[in-house]
Image (tube, rainbow, N blue to C red; front, side):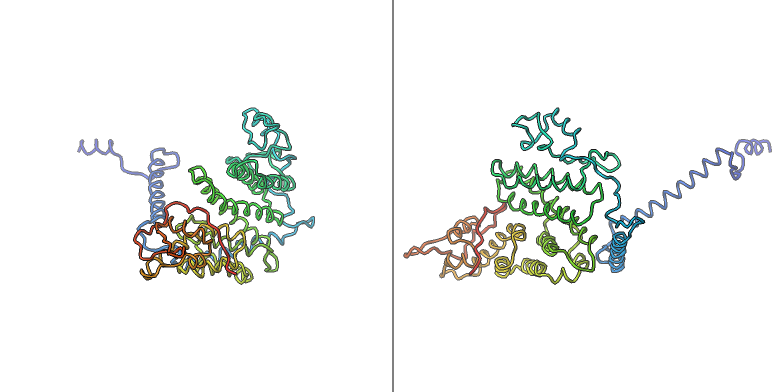
Amino acid sequence: MERTERQRRNHPPYRSAAPSDSAGSSSSTSRRSYSNRSRNADYKHSKYNTNSNLSFEDDADWRSRRSSDSKIYLQKLEAKEDDVGHDGRSHFDLPPVLVGTCPSMCPEAERAQRERLRDLAIFERLHGNPSKTSPDLAVKKFCRTMSAKSDQALDVRPLPVLEKTLKYVLSFLDTKEQPFEVIHDFVFDRTRSIRQDLSIQNIANEKAIYMYEEMVRFHVTSHQKLLNGDSNSNASSMHHLNTQQLSKALITLLNLYEINRSNGAIFENEAEFHSLYVLLHLDSNSQATGEPLTLWFRTLRSPAIKSKEMRFARTILRYFRMCNYKGFLCTIGAEASNLQYCILEPYVNEIRALALSYINNGGYKLHPYPLVDLSMLLMMEESEVESFCKACGLATSEDELGNMSLPTKQTTFSCPKGAFQRYSFVKLK
């Protein structure tokens, strides 16, 4: 009996905790925390379950929800465009989160700091002095940590200054005094800073569309020139970074088209830039630039889908994935614009190598393939065909009359692992 009483004193029965009871409060909090952790674990398991055989793209409900959410989002943007304030101003005329007041291409504080640190690009140096510049030479650099909350209005350039800066920066593309890699490095960074200032101020009007079109053109032409330049590691990394920024700038441009759309019409250059998005997705092994094309095509409006530029892009996409080298090359020669060809040029030599392998494997051994006919098929100069064959590991021969030909059934064919040298593209008459 005494033992039972002692146990009762040492181990009192559980009582519901009052608000002032610290022990009970701790126990209750512990139980709630465990319950929350359990629910969170179940949520994470259901959200990130890697063992599930289902994918979002295969879920019809997900596709319908995504399409519906996209339409709602665009309707909200269009509603904002049409929303007129008490003073009669439209959405894009209203003051953004931050309005820049910097009057020059580079904020004064940044200019002084970069002079002190001798951090001036070769195009910004006054009389070649690496520690001296001027407001007419210095251009604001891209800063990864910059944001509307942390930056001051005096450090952000307004739209008129950004337009002037972009025109000044792109003018360096015409100079021949420096290698293209040096010019590209400067223009690449400064245009990225321009895009950053546009984003911080929420500038999304038609002037922003024009500026983004110019910047995308710069990245597209650089895409071609960097591939045809020196095959060193620096040029390779520059091309990779350029492709990344090309994708980001192009996606932003396509969004700006949608935001500024009225009456369902498309902008003057919109169809061509939509086609560039398709051409960037030719190779399934290339860097992803957004959602799958099968979903992306559904979001396009009818005028864009039916445009000449988009019909060209879809035809090229079909020929490339079907390995139809003749249709691929002939369509490019007949319809491709300069911007479209800048993106397609690396694939041209890839398709030429594919055609060469077909001819080598399918030809008759006793009848060599004349290089004259091969040059017409590959749409390149006859003088370059022999070099191209050698790059693919195939030997050529010469007959008694001096005519060059390609013996077929050679077992030494191999597609070069690195990039091809630049070959001409001859359009058929």
